[in-house]
Image (cartoon, rainbow, N blue to C red):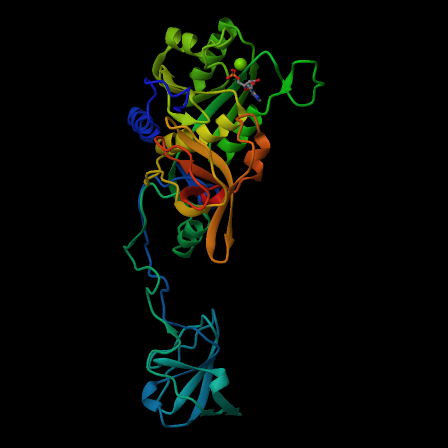
Length: 409
Ligand code: AMP
Ligand code: MG
């Protein structure tokens, strides 16, 4: 039996993503920031190092710097100390050596460092037990990066590793793309904000909290516009207000064809609708459009649909708008299904799963009830099980693709 929601006018997830990404502009507005503040931002220009790192030969170990030609001269005279930050700049002759510490300048004429564990010291006489090879225990000039080398390319996300690399090159300020500003609101007369008592028929609005968290995790400035009642006037007013100062707007709810679903009608009136049915489960009613220069993403109301459509569609869209160089393609892994999964062909399905390593095999279980209102399934899951659009039931023991959730996304 085919999926009853899979009507012929559905657009595949892949095609929808291509259309959405094509319609979105690339990032262009830049700003110069102190290095620390650039964490989580995207580089708008490639960066070259102005210096060699390391800029001088330095020691890998605490030990003694000497010349490898002195191998066999097992007794050397200690003539000074090179400390990290206090280099020994005197001349080292044959038969002589210098006490040296990790990170300290290796004096000229010395071409290796013997570990302190491999010598016996009596006053200024150093007896070498195990001779080092030439260059041993020395970090060379430009081992890490060289002067003029491009160390990071435009479109790189600045995480802790990139911040450290830039700092090691002495770069204090960098040019990044400006943050995106995304306004969001929920629609639905049944919704109550947390902090108030529920009356019969009401539910707490969880989507605004989910969307705020997802936007914040994605490095976007999130503007919460509250709950908007299910009337075309209220929806129109909120959309027009958001379009004045946001790069994009997200709404949840009101995009189906129910009597209280006004989003598409209003968007049609004040803006432009690009497409609105994607073959994805959960998350099928989905509106993409624009109002002037502001892009619009209308998500279904069901909380799990919000999370899945955000990850699968909005995140790639925002990444393009934020200037990321890499096409967004979350890593998929193959896992063995621990139980049969029932599915009707017609839509790409993202089931919530729990993956674990059992005897060196990645095994995945469903979290149970996959209803799009079961938020606890998102919290229990550590992965999404991806079931292809055309596939039907998948038997226990078969291999499926999974996408890890959390930091690996
Ligand atoms: P809708 O897409 O407006 O028809 O809503 C579909 C389902 O999602 C309904 O059960 C709504 O009550 C629920 N829902 C809509 N908006 C929210 C929200 N902001 N938070 C939690 N559930 C919601
Ligand atoms: Mg509704």
